[in-house]
Length: 213
Image (cartoon, helix red, strand yellow):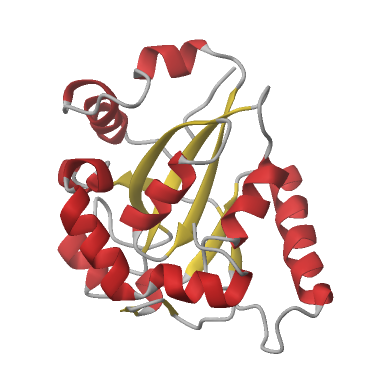
């Protein structure tokens, strides 16, 4: 049966319902259809600005929904302003809902690496601070093992001379970000593209991986 990992607070679950159903987001399935589908599973990734991480994962085959939010910190119900100040310990992250008949966690890991700078320390692209560091969050032993294997494969590949700094952490409370952050790239396409270009994200991805996302 599908479980909402990290949603111990009923108010957070209500917020998720609002995000998916009643806040004007039309490109994602309803909460009811997600819960009803026993093939849906969850993964959480931090890759810098969650606008970009959400956009990147929405393009991955088998991903049915994404939620931008905050995870890994000590403050309950943090606001965007608190998180970006760097004082809460949270990172900007995306909760990814995927259809296990179409993809799996290993494939999501492969897709994830191509969206980040794996050698950056406490930053991603133009966004600087621990709140923007790259983290793979695991919710069980299977995801933990796959995450470690995926990172080791990249380290052993010799593709990078610098250490792979992407962290692997156990999942903790995930707080959905404010509504205006959800589907930001769809709601504000021009502003999003301007931010992404000015941040040099795709230019850096091209230099790292030979492709942009």
